[in-house]
Length: 194
Image (cartoon, rainbow, N blue to C red; front, side, top):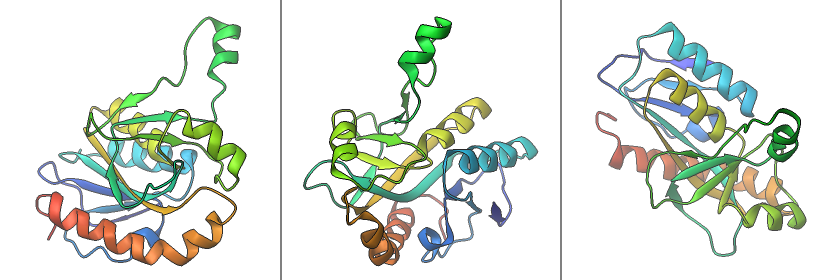
C-alpha cells in the first residue's frame, strides 16, 4: 500500500492496484496504490478511509479482462460482484446471504466480476461471461470498503486482455497503453484532476 499526496474532503481519491496502472497519471489529486487482490485492496482503502479525512469520492482506475468477444476500451462499471465467493454454500450453511452484487457508478454500465484468480483460460472466462462483461481482482473489495465508510465510488476499467490463455502476456504488453487511457479518462472526467 502506498498513498501519494494528501486526502481532503473537497477532492476525490484515485485508487489503483499497482504502479504500472498509474504510470501516466499527472495530477495533484491523491493516489492510493493498494496492491493486487481483494485483501490488499480492502485493507488499503479501508485503513486509508478510517484514518480520515474522507475524500469527496473515490475513483478506482484499473485494468480488466474482457469476458465477452469484442469488449475493448474504457468502461464505467455499473455493478460489481464477487465471482470466487461460494455464496450458495454459505447460504445453505448459515441461512444468510453473503457477497451480494453492489451497484456502483453508471447504472447502465457493465457488470464487473472480481476475484483473486487471474482469469486466463477459456472455461473460466465462459462461466464468468454468463454473469459479467469484464473481470478484475480489486473492484468488489473497494466497493465494499467505500460503501462501509459512506463514500461514493466510481469504478473505471480499461480492457487489457481477453481473459484467456494469452492474458498474462497481453497484460504485460498492454498495461502502459491502458495506463495512458486511464489517465486520459481521469483528466477528462474527474474534476480537479490537474
